[in-house]
Image (cartoon, rainbow, N blue to C red; front, side, top):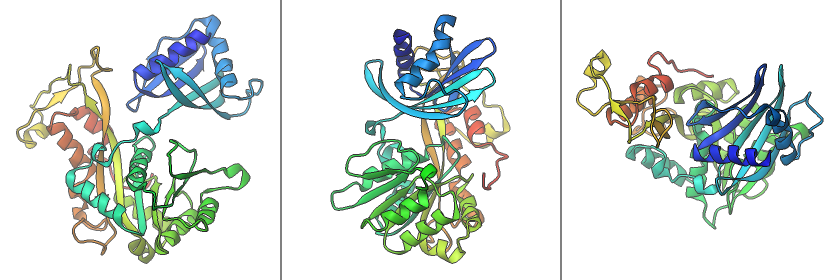
Length: 375
């Protein structure tokens, strides 16, 4: 059993998985790894191991192995492919048994510099300019799994200097960062984002990071902090930068407060990158290709090779940057139609034009028929 668990963790590391799914089905236990945002099957364990595997992991995570009726959470450290892993475990009762999802928590070495996120030169300058301001609210928006947290951590690393007091409120704490005060919120005991932020404002902060603005109290506290001399970073779940203003209005914030406080809004997605060892030339007969002009276009080799998984290896961020009206004429306003000049699909098509990704991937992540709006 222990050998199988070690082998599973080693496989997850080799394939760069972010999550391991253990899913009991009618015919046995199914195992899938999430790699570059998509789930992939791996061979199921033998029957004599499958029924004990979940119990073994629950023991490692200090979870109650006798409780199978209620969801549980746990955490533990193990080794995979010779390197230490921090794993966060979530259990859930299902029709055929208890399902476990293990999140491989990245370490601080996985945090990218701002120059490695995928921002264009102009976008990086706007982002750095917003981070250099002593106060204001910077919002990163996008669906779950679009890389928002990594963008925020990269920004925190950029700001992490001895003369700054930086604190975060997170659910949960994703990556421990030296020199930063990180607080894991606990809604079950009444310690939510708003309560934590209210307490942090009495801790002489310079920079605050809020894991997510999800209710009116947290939104109001974030705006108050930004208006009283603090730099605040947070995320909002919306489809686009323009939809973020609508969400803030829905949370009770006035247009005036938003315009006075919000420094920058970043909408982002993650595009899978084609494997440079096996990508193949794409057909260029479609109307879209003919409009894009000259360029090196490729598609994925779905059979993959020894270097990749189904023709892809790694991901890169694509971004749309906007500011509320009146803050800076150099950036498109979220209220203007020309905000789409920095749109996510345009940036994704630029990656396709450069030969970095496929048209199929562009259409999967930012389909042409996609419309702005809150999720």
